[in-house]
Image (cartoon, rainbow, N blue to C red):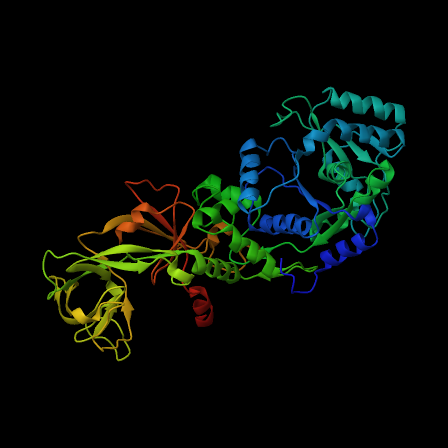
Length: 556
């Protein structure tokens, strides 16, 4: 995080706590995901916040899995979450699970029963909902609220032993049915679930609710600063109440605005629906807002950390433009991606005055943005080249600085050529462009004295390799698919994926590395996909070179 900017409100809280010696001046945070899906860009903000603040103030961060819902959780999600956190560049102090504390949480519940602060309720879920009242009307007490401590202890033990069916009983805290805060109206602490747990197996058939497990887990780990998103503000009094009544380590909860990114959704339930119905190719589809999807698309850890730093920490909800995330990856890849040439929509260019059968070897820098270019690669050149179809026009307008009859252009890393004529097929489609090259105009050795305004990329026909290219765009075609008031699956962008089965690439790209960014000159930033093999290369477009969506919005 930048030291030049002013402190955000969470940093101000931490610095005041350190200055006053609270918790011995220590900072201990935690990142507590539920392993019921893959992490998304919103989680990345929380990861960067929790780990980043701990790093800044020489503290520690636990990775704690909130695994209290056995029906929806899986070890696949646990492993993916660990991979994502590591990939973003962070390492946790301890890997922990709420299930580590099931026995301790049970004993906490027993303690509250003994204090007369919890009771077993036989009411059906619908009855409990009615009992809670409304935000403007107080609730009414459950008929089971006056059970004796002894009866509650026996019933709670019987719940643990599996003597009751799912939904038959719950354990509720006894607080205040007239509280203006609905969360304080005798909230449920435990429910019965006869379900196999990914870690504890069938040992437990009662599971703590989030509001009961979370604060107590924080206290057990002696978390000093528990950061949550704004929707947990109403939960904070209950968080504090449990800690106070149990007389355990006084962890404190603080809330910040969650990340709302336009042109996407971050609901795990909706993302899972996209996966299950087949709208996308799994959780790591490059169009998904998941961290694994962004990684597969070619986003870098540095770009996501930069994005999270730029959006900052706020106390009020706001929507962040997808263009900022794309700006961050462009900034990073511009400094790190190696430049290569690939022709996506080819037309043949024949240099008629270049000797037939002659090959030349040219040299191109890997990245001109880096001092020394970070090395170079050899580029074969020959009489016949592939160029982009859009780089030639039969009747070019006045300010067209590429190829057309009589027009000159520079071939990247090579020579200046002048278009002499072209060939059409029986349908009137141009199939071949002819040009003469100027031998004295070789890049780096140009003595021709000729100045041209345009430079185009190319690939030697004789040496070209092929690859599949996947052009990804935004998954939804409207800014706020979650708030549109209609089925979000009807708002998917039909042009979010375009597959080009075979594009021509320069031969050096055969040795492309997974996880490394490449700029296809003039076409965008690309990365090698996990589906790629040495025999069948597959590249994903990470992002275009410029923000095309900004132009579309201006048009609208």
